[in-house]
Length: 106
Ligand SMILES: [Zn+2]
Image 1 (cartoon, rainbow, N blue to C red):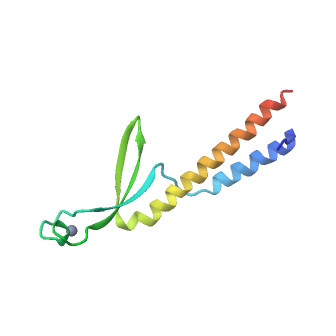
Image 2 (image 1 turned 135 degrees about the vertical axis):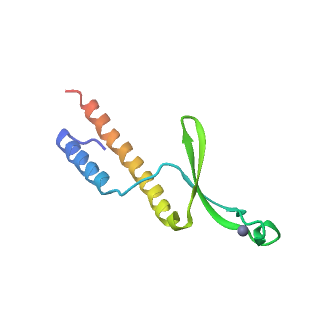
Image 3 (image 1 turned 180 degrees about the horizontal axis):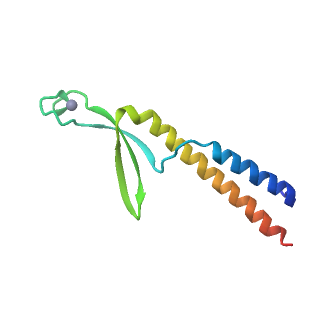
């Protein structure tokens, strides 16, 4: 898709507008798992089901980081992680627009 300079400028503004509409975001992958709680008398220490737990994992300065997400924040964190993916897509799209501007040369 080759756009002229004006069309690219318009596309740039559209993408920036979309970026502004994105809510809070969080970098990382949402992982749903199970955990054993801190109460030693709890059934999860025996044969009973363990507690569902959510983590957000990712790398920070080359180190794998795993952050526990409290239950009450789970749906919000899922939303934030989704927003991060949307934002990344927009960053890539915006970069493509700039590359096309470079290709126009003059
Ligand atoms: Zn337990």
